Length: 102
Image (cartoon, rainbow, N blue to C red; front, side):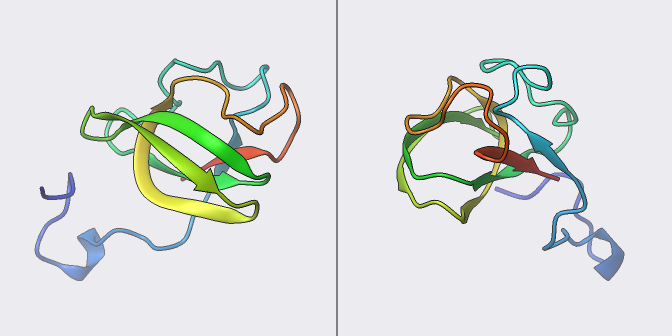
């Protein structure tokens, strides 16, 4: 499957570093099981600030999947548009536990 928006020139290639972040575990900023803001055209990678036993997400393609065994301090190099529910291991309304990387 091709990545949306890529053309055959260097300027259209995806970036490998994030330029912004959204803390998904803060209820004032994001509500689980809703689209992550700014993901209408491109999904976001996720950063886990705590050990996450499992996390259910909707991929950019629309496929819903569960990832398990994510270590604190790691990121998932996948493109997601939604986190279905609070990940196992995260604490409600605690900063830095799950970040969307743009």
